[in-house]
Image (cartoon, rainbow over all chains, first blue to last red; front, side, top):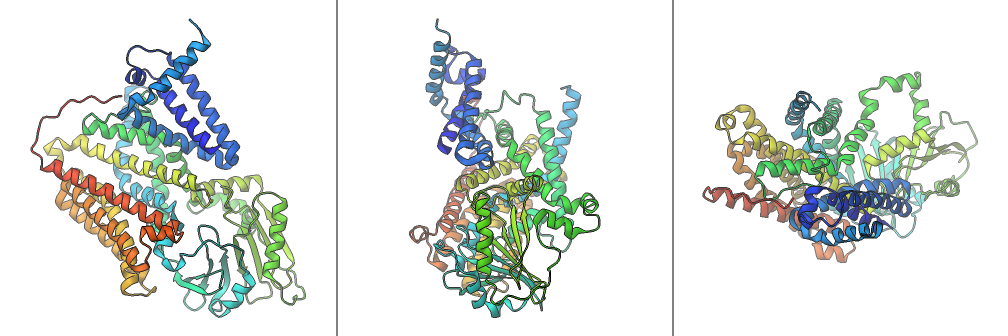
Length: 106
Length: 521
């Protein structure tokens, strides 16, 4: 559960970053395949999932504390990835595009 | 926000930052290290490197075997039972004759003494620096650290107010930009990602010393009876009723009784701390407490008080919700729970906070570096020298503390003056770093980083030479704490060496035009 919480926190931060225009451009260029709100909503849902799994796995006392610190670490990793390896987030960007297509098919 | 208001916040941020940052770095850095206080203590006190305890040792036997050593206590003895991070028993008391605090470390398996120290051994210097700037003769240190915590909160609030693109730049670090931009990005990044930690730590720190800094509210609540208030918060008995002394009251039996009751109420229910009070009188009591539970953030949540003579239960303390909230806030700061992942995350967040303060100072210097007039100004030179000494100098002093610990142990083989000599080494190296930074100015960064690397590697080598616990051997012997400290020292040393040499080579390179390489973000 703790590992799941950490993965959710990392994916949440990456999604939230992809929900910002400057980072979306850095990752997928100008041909945006998803809309910014989709990434932001996905990020928010993943953040809640991270908190939920953290509390389920560790109890409320440790879980909340762990969540705050995991999100801090995940934010740092996201910033480093965007700086040095932005292309690593392309798979996530494609997943966001797939989510969007499923929600509102052309 | 209006530009005028933002400018006012910027001035406040800059001014309070320059005034408080060097001391704040020290408080943050020592606090970060103290997340691993027990592990560093195992490194500094090799006699206490025991294997994990497999079963509970009998306290009655331990007391009986150490009766002569405990006879010098002035009426009060605290007993700390073994934990996974501290696999030994500690007897702590104030010596009747000298008034000094004595700590006996005892092997729980054999009840034999391992080491006797005062309360200055191991990480106690780092603790004293963290919460009172090592000003032990008065309360001044607490007041200064309290003021620093308030200033840090002011810095966090004013920093948020100053930031124009808080959300937009949350994940931004532009490695390809100029030094000034990179520093500001790193300052913003380390401030924002660990914002809850950077706010909660000074806040809970202030909360812990609140009673000392603002005693009036508690005095009013106590209504002249401080003892009653203490009993409401921590438990305890006000009076001990007279009774026929039972023959052979077993402390182990009383511990078992308390733990059996606690287990029915949830949690691990293990008594980790015992207090023998008013020894030698008819009113002697035993407090059995779950002070620092391994499985919860909340501390001091349960205690049972027994009359030592009769074994009669005098008080059954279970924290009320408000007292539990107090214990949670305090426990959040003390980090004594047994959770390795959280401990490492605390450590990383602490490093992040330290980096936030250092990058703020460096940005202040970098923003003024280009002007020759500013460079010559006394204010600039003071901030430059204190920043270097407060950053690389502090790290070198910390490494020197560990080197001194091993050297003194090897050469003097005595515990009496060890702590004093260790302190001398720490402050000596720190003072030298300040002098060096004043003389060498910007070039001192690389010099001091190379010194850090040398000291860190020397500390690891000396630990191996004096105890046999070279990193591979330590891991083979199951001494994970020692291996961990060695590993962090080697990594820090290597990083300092790389940065130091890079800075030196860069300084030796002929000046060339800066390329405008764009960052990815």
